[in-house]
Image (cartoon, rainbow, N blue to C red; front, top):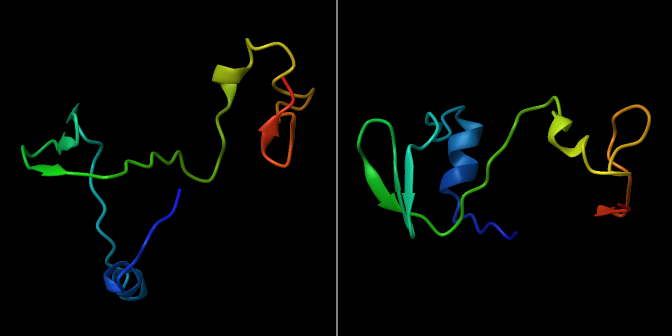
Length: 80
């Protein structure tokens, strides 16, 4: 994924004021709707889980995780 910043996002981060919102409630094609009813078009939606990975959803896949629960991969490509 490529993100092009025209300077506004970097400035918001530097000022500790990035655009943070609660989880969206609806996606209809390119239009997303937020909990407050605001709707806008988006090109990309990147979901982030935070700093602690929760990969339990991969556990049922044979060979996806190693014995410590970490993903088995080579250069980011799954070995399973």
